[in-house]
Amino acid sequence: MNRLSVVAVVLLLILSSVSVSAKTLDIYFIDVEGGAATLIVTPLGESILVDSGFPGDRDAGRIARVARDVAHLTAIDHYITTHWHRDHVGGIAKLVELIPVKRFYDHGLPAAPAPDIVPDLVEAYKKTTQGQTKTLNAGEEIKLLNARPIPLVRLRVLAANGVVEGEPPRSPQIRTCNPDQKPMPGDKTDNANSIGFLLSFGRFRFFDGGDLTWNVENKLVCPRDLVGAVEVYQVDHHGADTSNNPSLVRALSPRVAIINNGARKAGEVKTFATLRAIPGIQDIYQLHRNVLTTANDNAPFTCIANDEENCRGEFIKLSVDELAKTFTVSIDSKQVSRKYLVGRVGRR
Ligand SMILES: [Zn+2]
Image 1 (spheres, rainbow, N blue to C red):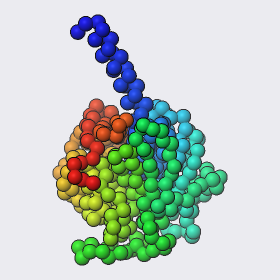
Image 2: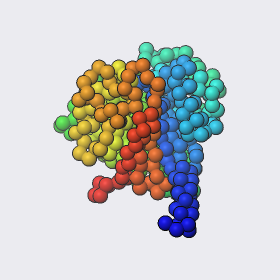
Image 3: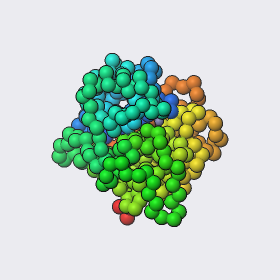
Image 4: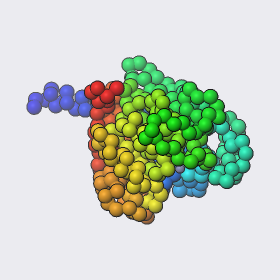
């Protein structure tokens, strides 16, 4: 190689690494031991944190570390609480002491005390947000920054408060559409009220349904599929079997599924089998090995961020390239990284 081509290659490498790091869409699945904390950073550097793990220092610390040291953020632009359970809203009061959070979204404060919601955590949230929150309803979007020619980034809410897009408020959970669709008893917990949303970047599509359960999941695809196929599915409710209705999972038909389970929480057998049965699914990732089930009901070693219960809280990173044509899932602690294509011929 002559001197000129060496210079050209070096220049190309510099340019490509700059543009890739500057314009990718990144999603960090932060380990909060069976809670949820998903950090999205758009190509223009706008950040959205979805849930904040359990109360206490551990989860807020892990989120702040990934946000500051890995994603190089100085603040979080948007914070969504999918619902009021302690493994989702628990960390926010502590987190704002570690990194500023600019805007807060939720499905509305609980109207009355409920046995599954810790009142102190709702009070802590009210104090943290000073009442400056926005209630998200199904069908609404969080407006994100976009600039051409970068593919469009959109975040659209498809479910909130037990209602899916296009339904009037207080619509029933159970909707029978087809004979093989068996509803479960009505879910009275706040899981059913979770905010579920679709994030798209060009043709790349990601679904995060919080802890949505069986009946509301069914409404997302019955009688009409409101979601469509996605590249990546953050498996509902940490991979619990009371969620992950096969009707929804089949409609999502993900190429990659990511389960934010704990060592002894969720990531359950039926859900794992439902995911595995999806034609075209390439990999299932887990934040934790489920120590309660066998190796056969767990992802392979290279797709699990934390193998032991006593772990260091390793995260999973997903990065969509600047043209939204491919995406890469990496577990830095294991130095593994796999690339996948966006879209499938004849798929949508
Ligand atoms: Zn949860």
